[in-house]
Image 1 (cartoon, rainbow, N blue to C red):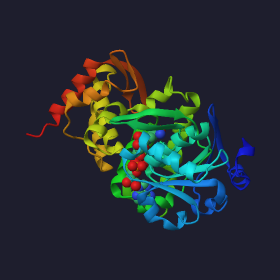
Image 2: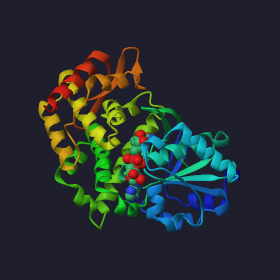
Image 3: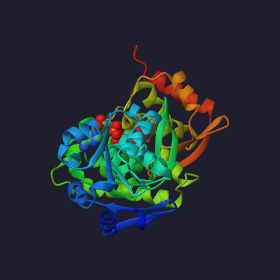
Image 4: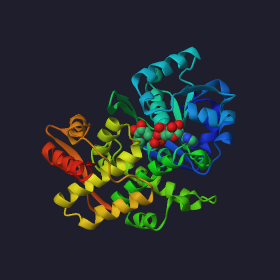
Length: 363
Ligand SMILES: NC(=O)c1ccc[n+]([C@@H]2O[C@H](COP(=O)([O-])OP(=O)(O)OC[C@H]3O[C@@H](n4cnc5c(N)ncnc54)[C@H](O)[C@@H]3O)[C@@H](O)[C@H]2O)c1
């Protein structure tokens, strides 16, 4: 592998302190780092940057000396057509097996960069610089790369780890408020599944607390989420067991976000509420938890009620990747900090969606 990579870059990632070896590759983690400084260690001939129009405009200095491909800043660009366009551009700039592709952006950019990197010339090295909170705590971690087919999320994908993930929290200074909330939806998700202490910490604080200039609390929170995700992926990279828990809130969320073009984090918040409603019936989750979770989501400016069309959502859910015959493996909570996987027949999910629809109907 080393021989294929440009040496300056290789030397620089070798110096990274933290690394985790997954079955599909070793990832180096560069926490609290400057991407600008890191970039200086990458040789211009063999480095290609992929970003989106927002980031390219906000941080022009980063991109002016490197071959850069810019994609539209929307979920719909995470598709096969964009992969083809990017691959053609890579060919045009004569990217070879020696090229390292770096995705700088939110989950859309890192998902598509990872997918492209793992299939271009049967796989080249790639790295991620997540610029959204959601990307830092979730999308860039774990080696899942994918693109959507129409409204079906991440239908084509690979499991292949980036060579490195660099965390430069200064990018978050330009992140819109709404995107902060989206990131917190995933942080709340980790707390619900694994970490009652983190749930309590989040309940005591607000976004402005974590946004403070001295971002120590935020960095700690990001590292804790990365640790939870890594622990899970290390045990089960291919999602045959424990990794499924990370889908808490996501099954309904994927359908809702596609139907209503709702941002991922907001849809996950709604999905977590629906999962709690089902949990009350099937795992005996304390009835106060759903209400408590709603308060926590509101505290982080996430919607807890949303008008949905249950029948349409169910139509999309039927094609969920977690479907087994006429049921879907659903993640439920037993209590805060303890999640379980249960196969749920379609009619149970349909009832819960209808219940949510009628609870949130606006007349
Ligand atoms: N691979 C995984 O394991 C995984 C996990 C979770 C989510 N995802 C995927 O991630 C995607 C969602 O990611 P996301 O929430 O980061 O959305 P995103 O990539 O669409 O980014 C959200 C918005 O924030 C803007 N933005 C990004 N960084 C910014 C910055 N520093 N300053 C100002 N604006 C900035 C973007 O241009 C975009 O408009 C979805 O496609 C989802 O499926 C993947």
